[in-house]
Amino acid sequence: MAKKTRATLAMEKSGKPFEILDYLYDPDAPSIGRQAAEALGLPPSMVFKTLMLEAGGEICVALLPSDRELNLKTLATIAGKKSAAMLRPADAERISGYHIGGISPLGQKKALRCFVDESALALPFMVVNGGQRGLQIKASPGDLIAALGAHTAPLVGKD
Image (cartoon, rainbow, N blue to C red):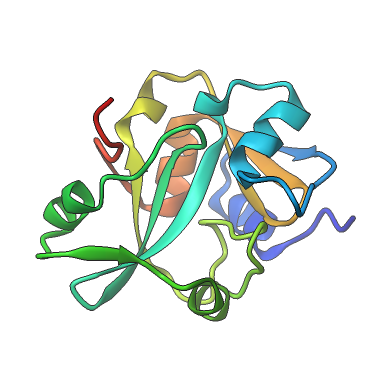
């Protein structure tokens, strides 16, 4: 497995410290993020999934714990838009330049506005996709948020 991806190169360029984590990717897993968390022996609350969305005509990225669901209305409001919807997988791949199961918020073809669930701020570290299936990037929330130029907000639905 290649250890250099656009995502890892983006983290290197940011100058922020990070670790690369490998795991055995299961293409049949019902939840990629949860499967990654289990394979890495981490709680799902620390492994963040990358979601590609369209909010009022703007493509953006949302990062949230792999065991939680995005509140689309909340994201739309935070983005200053009237509505938000998930991108179709083919569109997410085309726009990000990554394959489903390997979409990273880092190193995408074009810089997109990124929102990170505020739960990340309470964590000692968080894990995001490293731009390849079976590859993850582990870093402090502050360092990842800074590398992404991301905004933090409450993104998950209420239990």
